[in-house]
Image (cartoon, rainbow, N blue to C red; front, side, top):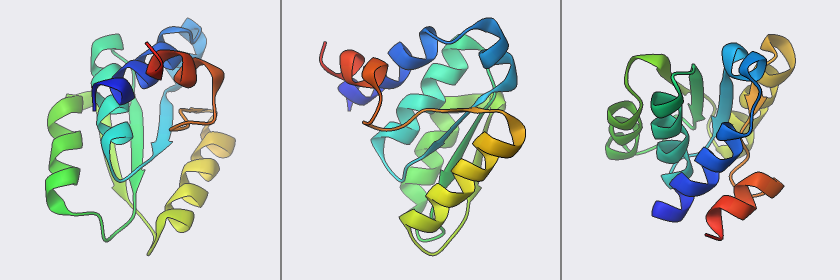
Length: 113
């Protein structure tokens, strides 16, 4: 779990103040979601975490606990692909920065520490 926090935080710590002001978005039903939520809390930025509707309540609650008031959990879609499409929509329409769980050089570097 700790490597997921480091990956999300490393990516988010490298964002500009303008990007942080617009907020971040992620799609995850697991540890990456918690890492983004905690990182948003630490950096004081808005985050929307999109999770599939069938995500277990314990995972949803963990994201809410780690994130606090600047983090919104959005349950959307019947599977990961539908939730990911919603996250992509938020990235495109609201100008939020996507924090991908693995396909990003800053996330990879943070996870590798």
